[in-house]
Amino acid sequence: MVWSESVPRFWRERARKYRLVGGRCRKCNSIVYPHRSVCPHCGAENMEPIELPRRGKVVTFSVVRHPPRGFEGKEPFLVAVIELENGARVLSQLVDVHPEDVKEGMEVVAVFRRYREQAPNGIIEYGIKFRPLK
Amino acid sequence: MIFSTKVGISGYGAYVPVYRVRDSEIERIWGGEGAPVEEKSVPGLDEDSLTMAFEAAREALTMSGVNREDVGAVLVGSESPPYAVKPSATVISEALGVTPKVIAIDMEFACKAGTTALILASALVASKAIKCGLAIGTDNAQAKPGDELEYTAGAGAAAFLISELSSDSVAEIECAFSYVTDTPDFWRREGEKYPRHTYRFTGEPAYFHHVISAAKGLMEEVGLKPSDFDYVVFHQPNVRFPLRAAQQLGFSTERVKPGIVCDKIGNTYAASSLIGLVRVLDQAKPGQRILVVSFGSGAGSDAISLVTREGVGKRRSSLSTLLERKIYVDYGAYTKLKGLLG
Image (cartoon, rainbow over all chains, first blue to last red; front, side):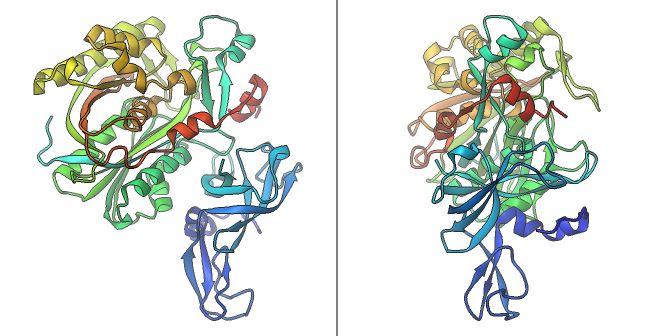
């Protein structure tokens, strides 16, 4: 996901980041996250916002040891593709688990966490991440 | 104070981070013996009082089954908000999906703000100004490394969804009593990272005077005595203080022990007595009376009397799971999680 140090941008995106709001295509029924105006599957411009289920499973994951800007000092951390109960896939950080304990297929649940600070005196960005269900 | 309309808790929730550090590990670094608690909770790198408050509030809202649009107030009691200026209550309200028609405010009174939020939410519902209100106590307690406070400064949150009393309520909020004086036992100045405290002064003139005065004040005002209560929950800065307060007031140890959680998670400040209340509600049966007494430095106590109703036991919080879900860290990892490595 492209990152810019923009307060208005984070403000615009808050609902989808805070509440796991994805988009459902009224034409082909695909569900995507985050919500967007054009369906990435069929190209229709007929998407409606939909709040996604909070539980899912780890499809695949990666350990980030060289963090991008804004995530310094947080390494190592996990980024995973999560398949939610309705089949929608979400790219998210996976927290509260050691990298060596993560397994594909592991059941996970959404939590609300800090993403990053734009600067020590800047806005703190919050949003959804996932943690192991058990 | 007695509310003009009967109000009750229709949902409640708690949150405790997964990480723990043992007091023996802190003693290994800083020396000392006779640690006040066994271990304490430590927030993850991406957790703060706001994120913990959201988790507890979401559980309370879900348990209540209340519609989001009926939540008319989100009152967040904390002494560790992530911003000096910018409310946590708006972020929490937005994430819960209860904006924009909501009274949302951050409240501060050291460890007491959570119970005061509970009283105010109850008063707003009782006056019919709002249909339902969320009261939250949350803290990510800070302590200077090596300070006495470091052995207990924990992290956690508890939240209560208050609405008019119904057949489905978990508990009725029977009455409340507040007792405050200007007693400077603990403080943190604007811009300072860590609080200061006055050591033993925190005990008699601060904690015990206020806790006991508020508890006695409540019982005298409404004509109740210690034997009328099945459970009693006090603010828990350590294990010793609530046990001694119970003894001084004439409550047996069996009444106070079920609500003690600080031996496992430390002092969670504004959440401390409220997580204790969640612990009690999770084991109570209908028709039992509970006394909750908070203490906030500076100083004051809120005493609240509750009577459990038919809804208790039908739904339980995730607290027992959260208390068991643990990843132990050593002091090195703890300093990273607390952001002490820069």
